[in-house]
Image (cartoon, rainbow, N blue to C red; front, top):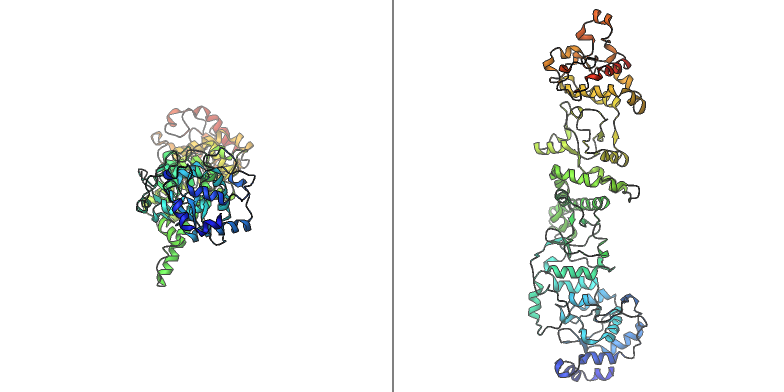
Length: 619
């Protein structure tokens, strides 16, 4: 029969091209002939899931026919009009070179391409290319046979795969200018006929090449992109779709599939957090379109966890670095008399990502920085049963300038910000990375120290949980009180020191002296003994100035240089203003002296305890 058809091609063409209604049969004549020509090919025991078939088994179960036998059969059928397509025409079965299926299909082109759809989704997806898909009326048996032939890659018959979509089909369904673009603006209101999806595959009444050319210039609809991802939801070859932006992201854009991924699946994002992520080069998946389980997204979309966000930021930083390198590369080409590399990856990245990372880091608003830090430092990401962050992720977490620090004190200088505009100086003085080259790491202040005495090296934390995470997982050191007094407080000139903050801090230390020295800081006694941090009575000779003006250096004394005011002999022999501690450190309960002092109100009753603390420190 195969030889007979080959010798009567004109009669064959006339027969298979008769209108369907004149053939008085449900199946196209070409399908009947082709199935008969393949009837001596034994079907494998495995089944293939097809349109209209109730089988639930995967096409991966099909058994390959012997290549030699298959070559012999298709060679006899080469050039015969035996492939009925969904537009009512018939295409020839042609043999292509024995190359890998994807390369062979590309070489053969799309003129005689016929795709065998293996399910309802594929018919819906490709229904606007009816001249390139097999007529669904050919029957299940013939479809199964043709799928086996398609798997061998020897003819113009093809299975629908991500690679075939990328090379041959999407160029006809998407605007040509989209190919190779990192992301494109997408008209969500588009309702082009090239993108419409119906519930059942159907054969159009008329089909003209001119209509196809018009459709190719129009954008896909929301339904088309959703259908595409439903089809790809559990496929393993999605990475072959590598030249077309088909991933829907927030903001009405479609993005190229990339690894490592900068796209994040939707989570419990606040407006400020979403804004921060977008500024740093991340994208948010449009979950209104992909609102169904889709395992194929895993390599291309990060999960809304701390690890996922950090991986997306790492990818965004790498992309920005590549863009910077691309700019230098194109500058060298220009200096050599060559044009920029507009077609390559360097040209693409330099055009779209140049300088994005560093610029957006500087432009993050305080609310965005706070929200990003709060999200990343949630206790659930660091729980014992949670997936541990990798060293690379922890490094990114430390390097982000999202950690609010206390305002710089007057004696502090910021050489790193000296050359920056005023607005940037103010922003960088408030938010810094935990560690940066050439700068000492940030610290946590000891408990009880007034914030007015803390400078820009100390983190202003919002909660004890956050501080615990900083210490345990990000290697941030909490300074002891003795180290703080020696290294920081003693270095501040008295005229630059807030009087009420100094008094409030020293009151806390002396009230809790025994507990601190026993549990945390045994060297505290010896440190306080020699530091001139206790105001004398001369500092407050005018009660109206108590807690307002800075304390002159001459009016501060170390405990070892002060005397116990309870000793009457000392009272008679020594100058009361120069040699005795000021209230409330002298045990005084005078409430008039305590107004305006941090931590002092209601504490004068503890004056005796403060005085005993000074005694322990060498009073």
